[in-house]
Length: 118
Image (cartoon, rainbow, N blue to C red; front, side):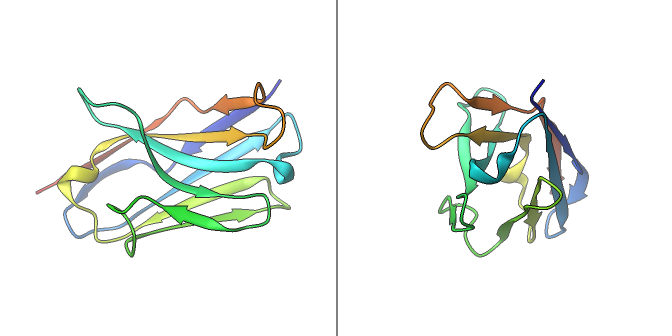
């Protein structure tokens, strides 16, 4: 069974930092593009950051320069280092895995809450 499990969310003051982690199990994720998404109350889920199978990263404009995504192929994990957090970063953050060829191989974690107080 394929599983993605996020951890590391919490409450932090504006300007602070958090590090989210996502542990993948049940398949070999090295071929997958991995992403972090977030969904704030009343808003649509949006892409925050993505990392390709060969380690290239991309970021939403709203987090560029503040968030850094990385992956550990040996541990089957991805991380999201979030610095200079703002209240508008408050959301549930989800880990996603998408196979680049087989579209049906798309998996989500259960989400982790990030709350940034002003």
